[in-house]
Image 1 (tube, rainbow, N blue to C red):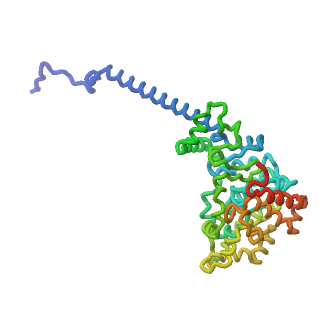
Image 2 (image 1 turned 90 degrees about the vertical axis):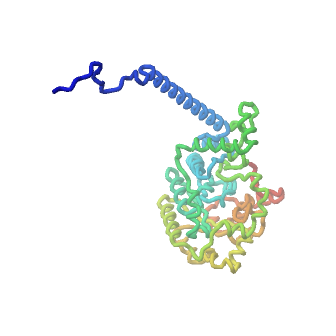
Image 3 (image 1 turned 30 degrees about the horizontal axis):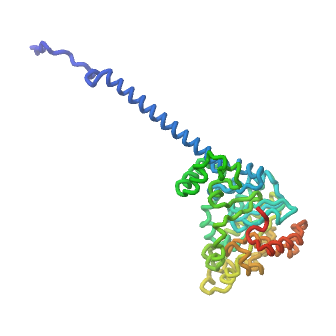
Length: 411
């Protein structure tokens, strides 16, 4: 017997009618909401784009968002410009293009220790200072390789310091490895500029708020300092790659010419790390392949630091690398590798505090006196026969007469 179907029953649909949930009205709301979101997102992106353009324009006006190659070109045009990218890891990418432009006879690859060697000191040779780009021997190889790929200088001077041959030094300075061809440089530098403006009211007032004023003091086209850090600290790289220290870094320099300042900054070790000698062998081989004469120099240390390394009994274990580095075996190894090495660590000039910015950074007069000491060595004279020692002596006398310590050559 079949089951009766209720008279008012209808066949149930497979899906719920749209009208049950609002129908076309709900769909229109969804469409309007999506349109609103798209408009909001578009507006937000437009604001971000506008803000990015404004930051870029502001940064270009003071050299903060100028590309590194354009900064290098700007310095080639304006020899008085003092340039400083915001992060030391980008400093090689400023300097290497200058090598391609200047084509120097002599380059100097160094950490910050060699920053005060000026082009005038080595005249008539053309010179460019690549200091502040290589702290470890591996980093020296990187910079040497890149600097000599397309143009080969006659001589490459390299800082070779006892502490570079410890196993701790490369680990501690791995963070200083240079960055090359970073597509985000302008963004990072612009962000640094805005963060600096947020932290420093004077920078915000003088360099950002007054950007539209005709007498804007930070504008790159009107000022000598290019880049946020250069403007803030009044320091940076000169056109020859040497470093112009700002007054803030120099005013208290005397208190840092101590043994503690040296040994706390530079690691000691019982002996030379053999892995570092292998790295040096690779550097020497690359120099031979490129046809570049390799000259190593250990620049002076303040006498208080040298005395500590020589005589402090509590540090005797850690000064083993210092003693071994000065030994005949290491000097013979340098000669075998074709490295002409000069050690100024014990030069008499280390007794005068005027020759130093701190215990291990020679001042400009200290660097000039270092050159005078080198010119008294026949082998150095053979390498640079065109340098007139009398000219160097006269410049030192002039600086002493005028009591110039940090700026022997006018900036």
